[in-house]
Length: 241
Image (tube, rainbow, N blue to C red; front, side, top):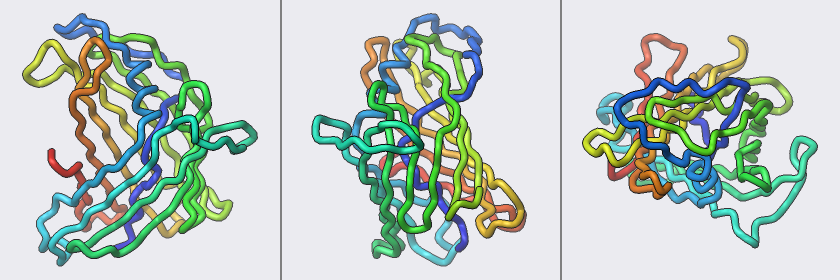
């Protein structure tokens, strides 16, 4: 299975685009900037599982667990892409039928002031991701608002391998008008037809929030699409959802 899952998990947001506000029924303002900053700062210990029928790839279960410590007073500073940043160690464990198949280790780089994600380095394959453009996130937004937040590029051993973009969207909650869903999307696209990995990937991280900025619930989904049209996309979703 030659799919490379995008392991840079916690993603900041950018690209020079203005927020598009399509007013829906909920005109309550939600503090999207402080919530995203809170998410950038917190640690991760999350697992996602493949949703396909086991017969699709001859296995009972496939899962990925991501671990990332929170940013705190012990977080170290370093230099990345010519700037002073915070650095954390990220680990990824891939399991099949409960047995560890592979462990991956990476460094995640964040801006010191707002904790925005600015880059990532994977020790296993030399994959380096750099956020090249960012735009400020508004203090508040109403349901129906969305905005492109970042764009960047990935290289492996110095060769361009993919490009990526991210955006946020504030959606209505299904059954509760007093809350909203803040979704962060990350899209990765292969750079050329000559590289081995030709997987397009979409990640979505959706959080139920209230007007005070409390995070009440979350859902993670990762979809990897192969360039081989005969191959079904791999869909992963957070355990417990």
